Amino acid sequence: MLVLIQLVRMLFGLYSFAIIARSFVSWMRIDPYHPAIQFLYRITEPVLAPLRSRIPLVGMVDVSPMVALLILWILERLVVMLLIGLV
Image (tube, rainbow, N blue to C red):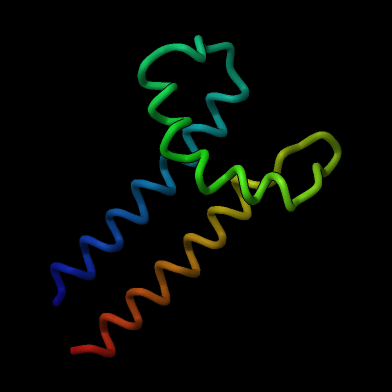
């Protein structure tokens, strides 16, 4: 069961890293057609787009990545608690 909990934490961590990387990429002048950037957008857009449509801009700043990270953090904790409860 410990291995499963570590796997869950690793997957949530990797996805959180992808969201953070996408935020940094948006601040830089990087070719949006580069395959790595396209992949980053493809895996994060399904989470960020619905949030972006519901959360207004705060002073021209998109806060959807921060909200997504908060939601992911809460979900990770819930999943880990459920897995611990199954032991």
